[in-house]
Image (cartoon, rainbow, N blue to C red):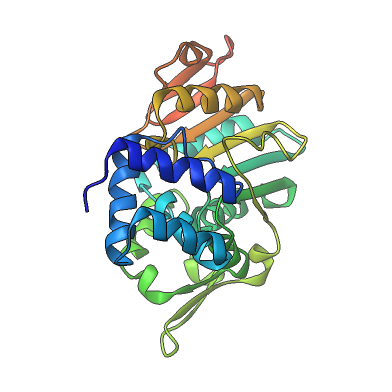
Length: 280
């Protein structure tokens, strides 16, 4: 089913009326494509979809989950993690405390990847880590730290590639793998560490009341239009420490004037400090 822009705007406006969700800043092309798939999968039209969302909160959350795209994996893009390791070591090793926010964390696999890395680097104990997402369902999975082994099958190499600087690193020290039940369970000392909260990146602001040494928001902003991207990038900058790090997706980039406030290494943006002298 092909949708007109008028129909898409109708859906966005009606969704705002019946829920707290506002998709008005999303990229029209990708949003339309996902909405068309939802209509096709449910064999319905826009009007009936809205009615069902209004009557059934669980269904509404399912639709939101389909629209917002929840893709993640452990140690996603190993080359980025290898670039990030010396930056973390240099910037964080002398700090007494570290605040990290994974915005749009989905089911939390990168949150736990970060905690594994910090544990190996001896920084786990002084880190407060927050994960947020728009969708409560994925947050429940993140809080449980329990995943289908199928979700990890093709990503085991990510661990060894990303953590090659740590020859003693062993994923089994952090994960319980039950092949019979088909489950991977993150060990409790990691699961108890992060705080996962529902958060709307567009309108909720900084609900944490602190500035962050690192914000990781990968492959979320690619679905926003340019104006909304600019708004969020400015928001991130304002909530980073003066020596902070912003990590975004490999296909994302800052195109607005705020980019002048950062030095860029791969998809890692470092708040500019004249004393920094990065050599890679």
